[in-house]
Image 1 (cartoon, rainbow, N blue to C red):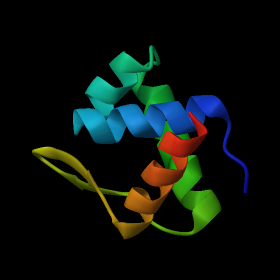
Image 2: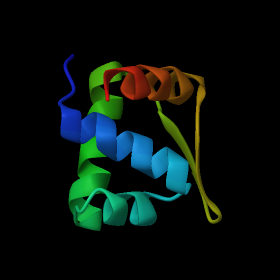
Image 3: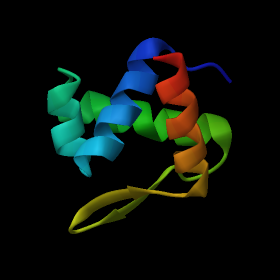
Image 4: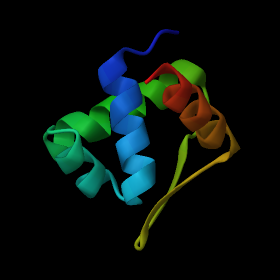
Length: 74
């Protein structure tokens, strides 16, 4: 499992924005592309990274761990 810098940056933007839509905008990606990238990251890890709700997204424990990793790398 390897994530590129675009994946890590997108994930950081999504968590910081609290929304896949706003995170995609910050990362200059289309919503569909951002959603697909996040889903592929979750599939590769075999764990949910985000809890999705009507009010936005929050990271799971795995998501918080990945966020720390992403911030270190970026």
